[in-house]
Image 1: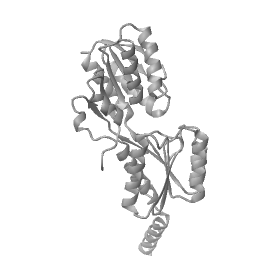
Image 2 (image 1 turned 45 degrees about the vertical axis):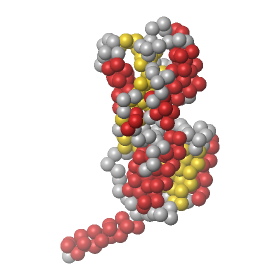
Image 3 (image 1 turned 60 degrees about the vertical axis):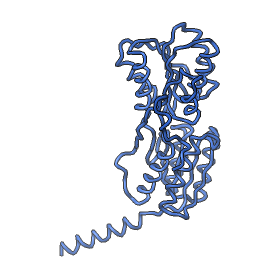
Image 4 (image 1 turned 135 degrees about the vertical axis):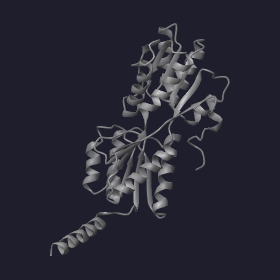
Length: 311
C-alpha cells in the first residue's frame, strides 16, 4: 500500500512539474538605447538564442533611452501583451522593483542583463570587479608598480561600482601607486570624460595612469590630455567597444593602451538560457551569473572578436 502511495505521489509531482513548465513563445527586451552598439549586440544575441529554442518566438525589443518612466511603460506594455520572459537592462536597479514585481505577479519571469535589478528572478552580467581589476593591474605593470593615478568614476549603477571596486583592489596591492582622485563622475560619456579629465589634469601636474569606467570616458580623457599637451599617461577602461578597437589600432592615440572587454552578444545568449531554464521550472545554480572579462590591448587587438563580429 505504501509503495502504491509513493508511486502515486511521484506521478502527481511529475504532472505538476510538467504543468508548471512553460515554452518560450514571446520575449520582451528593454535596453538602454538601440543606437548604442553594445545594446544592438545584446539584442541580436538574445533574439538568436531565443530562436534556437523556438524559431517562431515573438521578440519585442525596445530602447528606453535612459528615461526611467519610459522603461516602466515598456514593462507595462510587455505585461499587457502577455510575454513569457522580460529581459531587462535596468535604468535604475532599485526604482524598477515595483514594475518587476508587477510583471512577476502576472506570471512573467524577469532576467536582468548587464546591470543587476532588485527583485529580478536572475541576473547575467560581466564580472565587473574582475574587469576593473585587470584593467588597473595593466596600469600597475606598465608603471612597474609606482606612480600617481586617477580613477575616473561614473554613474553609480552596480556595474560601475564593481569596476571601481576591482580597480581599487588592484591598486591597494601596489604600495607604490598613489590614487589622486577616485570620486569624479564623468557621466559615462565622451564629453564627461573630456570635462572631468581637463579638470583633473589641470589640478594635478603629474599623472602617470588613468582608469576610466568605460570606453567613451577614456576616449574623452585622451582628447583632454592631447589638448593640454600631456603625454606619457597609461590609460585603460572597460567595454571593448568598436571605438576602442579603433583607438587601440591608432598610432595617434598611444596613451589608450587597454580595455577590459565585455561580450554583450554572449551575455544576452546566457540571459535567455537562464530565462528558459526558469520557465521550465529549473532553478539556476546561482542568481547572478558572472561573465569573465578579457583584456584587449594594442598587442592583441587584431585578434579580438568584438561586439560587431559575425556570430
